[in-house]
Image (cartoon, rainbow, N blue to C red; front, side):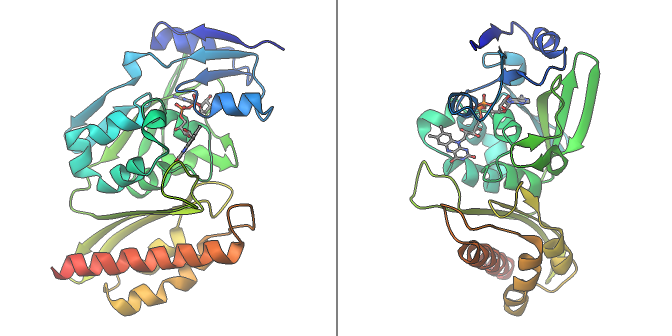
Length: 285
Ligand SMILES: Cc1cc2nc3c(=O)[nH]c(=O)nc-3n(C[C@H](O)[C@H](O)[C@H](O)COP(=O)(O)OP(=O)(O)OC[C@H]3O[C@@H](n4cnc5c(N)ncnc54)[C@H](O)[C@@H]3O)c2cc1C
């Protein structure tokens, strides 16, 4: 069946075009994921509402104790924004390892969240940094922590009549941040495992920990057991070695074309240990 494409002229026009709530009417942003899924028959749609050129969705704005950005901001613009880059090195590291320059110039943050891939690279740092999403529809707005946007592989809690319009990140300059991505090659690759961490270290102790993984569960994962294990502890080499059990209790990777369950478990454990050791060296410097 042919697919119609409507070019939204404004955000309110886009919301009106989506307002029927028909799940086969889909927003189209950079099209770097949606068109592939459509071609492969893995997504059903009879109408696409293009939001690609909406300026109202493409901006980055530092505001008091947060930095906000429009969900239509492309990955390349986000990583180039000086205040964003200074505040969130983990997200910038993820953006640098994201696909290729061509894709980074088209792919949006909203699309990275909206396709709900467990391997999405921007999502773990956004979870670890405490991102909140604004969802808008013709009827109103709501907000939710980003980790609550994911139900399972390719499934989100974003309703068909809603658009992700905005992402808000609390300031995190005081936080030790890490991002790691493992793939079969250096660029243009889907993560076998990725990890993001945001640790607040007060003297020798970890005051708070936020940790997230990709590709180790049906959806991007906030690692609550790891966070509980780390919070309040002294940051030491022993702690880094002992984190393994908590990591393994959080994650549930499967054997697939990108690697075995055991291999992914080892990557996740080693990446977590390595990030903690780097945090320790940073705290001692
Ligand atoms: C060659 C190649 C390499 C890639 N490499 C990577 C990589 O390294 N890391 C990675 O994470 N991804 C990668 N991807 C996947 C893809 O580029 C990203 O997921 C990208 O962020 C999708 O954004 P988009 O704007 O193109 O979304 P689209 O393809 O337009 O949309 C994706 C999904 O999100 C929905 N959507 C889009 N915007 C919104 C919104 N504002 N509100 C609600 N729903 C929305 C759409 O309806 C659709 O279901 C790659 C893709 C290709 C083709």
